[in-house]
Length: 374
Image 1 (cartoon, helix red, strand yellow):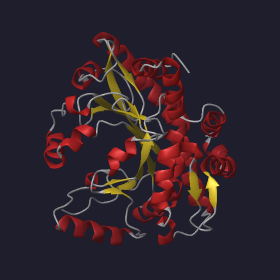
Image 2 (spheres, one colour; image 1 turned 90 degrees about the horizontal axis):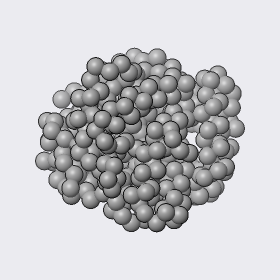
Image 3 (cartoon, one colour; image 1 turned 135 degrees about the horizontal axis):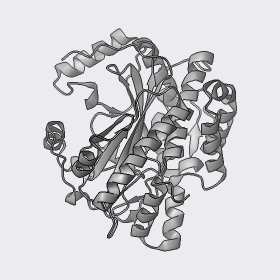
Image 4 (cartoon, helix red, strand yellow; image 1 turned 30 degrees about the vertical axis):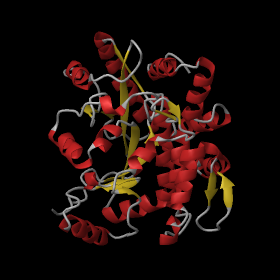
């Protein structure tokens, strides 16, 4: 099977997808209500889309093509508000968070759709363990070569994005010690990790053809890379973010990625190299494990820095780009969080230490999703 043609897209436009938890109001465990929620959403007026995910306790929402941070926020709020009306009718709740803190993966049900059944047949129990929740951000690219350049440029900032978005410290009722344990589940898949270092689309097409010839892949959906091109959308898709606890945080992360993309496109602050990936796995692990306190290794100098310090320095570099994109509020939101709680994983841990009950943590997560708590 050949790779789909790369559709031209307006540069730096955004699209955001959020995978959400569906929980009951009794003990706040996951509940299989995706189909019922989607039926209630039919005929309602909202931007974007609402779709099922691999298990029936998950729901994915997606914006349309957005010009920037403000539009992303408006569309996410509009979808959220419609879902809140529907969840009341079913006596269920939705929330963010990269993992549900105490759900039993073996009790999950594969959503009744052909692709999800195919994945279940291929990956076995990993399919149910893939009941984890992420945010994906698409960035528009004017052409395929530019998409590959942006993909590799953004790879340096994968640890920064992981640490900012981390919201999955608990798995199966236990504190994992990680800020983002979700990505450990993603890493279990054979085609996870990073993309090959090619900067021309014809070389990428050749790579894909070889992979398809082996029968291992049939489309770009079969690659679970941290960042991957989406030729049918004309975008690159950043996939390392845990689902945040609020739509405001999700929109801020999208705005930050847009600012990074503009900085890389306009200023080209560093030359791309295969060597950029030498500390990639180390930096990625550090961000998952330690969040904003992780050690970050600069690919050029080899210097070791604290990730939160590197983030604050990057925010300074992006100031003019944020102004051009009208994304100052996005950067300020992330700055304030770093100066305050830190990230959602830290908020979840602190709440559990105070309440000593993970069900109460999830209840509070549902309130944050609805905009009722901070």
